[in-house]
Image (tube, rainbow over all chains, first blue to last red; front, top):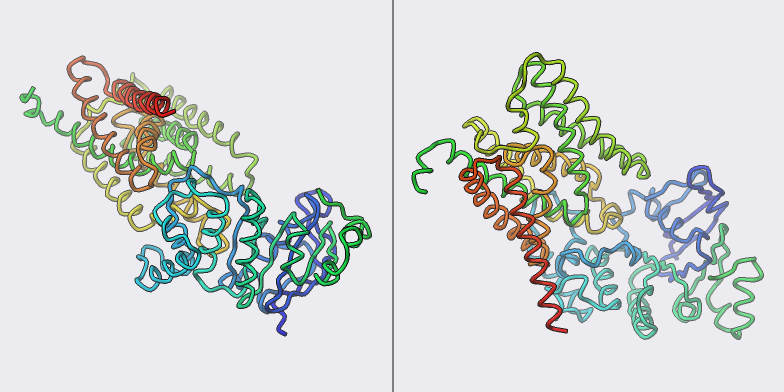
Length: 243
Length: 271
């Protein structure tokens, strides 16, 4: 299998504070479904930002699709954390989904017919067609998250990255979302940050436990064991506590 | 009342009122949605530095205002980029520094600057034909810029991180947007003056935001409301023989509060 992301000895700290990430090494392969878990402040979002090229590591190197992260962005679909979104913002579902195209468009141009058709197709696939003109604030958490994923998918990315996608969604909505990601995983690599180890361990094939360092597990290793040893293995053994 | 329209100064005033309502309807909607009304206030006050400089050096005060408002807009943009923590303090500092520079230049200029009050508080009835052309040019520039950049501006405000990851030039867009704010401040200085600009940028758009929850709808309503307020304000200020700025602002505030109250009571009845 092809290696899509390779991180070597990555360290990162904000300003003069202690290291958020220190000496991180990992590889992610094509069609992997990676769940990143760990305590608050353990560096989960920071790691995503480094993969996305939003932050540069202080030391070490990272390659995404054999390129620098910034160059690889056109192949990445990104679903930011829910808290980034202003629910009063006057924007419709359709405009949010279409905005996925904007980065690749010449500034000042209109959306082409192909782009609109493709956006409508994804909206339909995601069962959002009745909501196209609804404001983003007038959706349920699960619907809104599907809109954000639809937006990330219009450019047909090779890698999909999600930051805590099930925050603000009830349990059932969360499961639906992971089912959706499970289907998408057939055609792309997925990396998702999450709090709920239990739920994601059913869907992912790799778990990164991140507490300033990264420890990689295959998901089988976790799901085949009973609850207690599972938790023990993932967290306590490595001094990693979940909040 | 019809005899009023025989006077070219009155017609100029009305046309400038309409044009400035269009500029501030468009830019004001972005300012309100992005919640940067104090950035626009800071840019407006800083432009007074340029007006003072122009008085001192003897060139057109509006050109001085353009220079200082754009410089302060870029200053705030870069400080924000470099160090987000300094943003609030820098907005306040630039606000006051611009005013201070303006006052010092005016102090150094011999003689009393009689129409200075009109730059501070606005008096659209003093506007010349030259002012009219300038406002028209700035208006066209603002309309065309937003027409072409609309989708990009909307998305980079909505979700900056996503926009950055999809390679949208978020920071250059933001700087350009701040320049548009600076230019609309200059457009508004004639009608409401440096000190009251912040209200005219935010009040019509805030009223519009209560009526529509669609970005283009907000802009449309902000323009309509702004035009009504400006035109009515100009007529009232002529008859009462007071400066147009405060009249327009009080009208705008009245409209905003009325819509807010109507909405509040109709929501209450529904419950």
